[in-house]
Length: 240
Image (cartoon, rainbow, N blue to C red; front, top):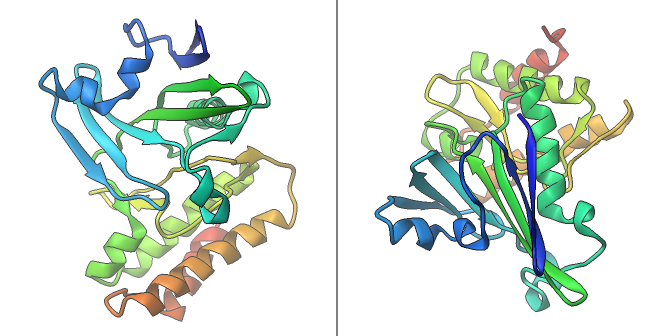
């Protein structure tokens, strides 16, 4: 997978060179594809919706970068400009490319764009949609997962940690299971490669807090201490 870079008057695009498309900012607007007859769907996210579009090149997921917390109330989608290589979209696209090429279960990166506006910029990311994959939180709201599923989830996270991948927000919303019960991980905004350290334990603590939080907020969530033990059983297994 080769990176193709396109310079814009006020920004830039990085994309998979294997896609025969003359990229421009319109291609990052789901409405552009919808006006050409493409089916468009939507899934709620923590900081805005992810939109799904059936393009001539396959089904893609479109995400506009938005801020959370107090800062997000005033600057919902603007970030401080620190150079093209440090934009959120380019960094995530390149990290996904690296992980995808290593065979880790992540969505294939398609393209990323940043548009500079004086001292700030906005950004968007396009990835290939993972067929049939839904967040762990959605699965738990419908039924309890078997121990084997929890072990697979633990083994999945272990693979990322062994590769030095520090996910900045490991939660029950970013861990997915597809129709075959295989786990995936997405949303690598602010993720990075790190040397072994205590960050991996912090990652697991973050996930446990997320699971406890959604189970307290929604009585339908099927999560118990035994599930976390099964997760750890999978995590402790030696990765293949």
